Image (cartoon, rainbow, N blue to C red; front, side, top):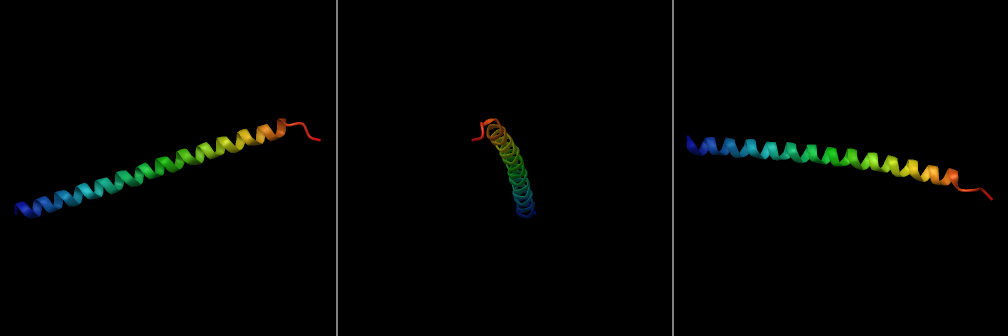
Length: 53
């Protein structure tokens, strides 16, 4: 009985770790997309402010 409970406990911890890793990845991806958007906007502003020949 104790071994079965331990196995269920380890399985639950593994699922929690996978969930945390997936959530962390989503957060990092969202931050990356936001930074890419800011970078593109700043680049567009710099291009617009540059005098044309």
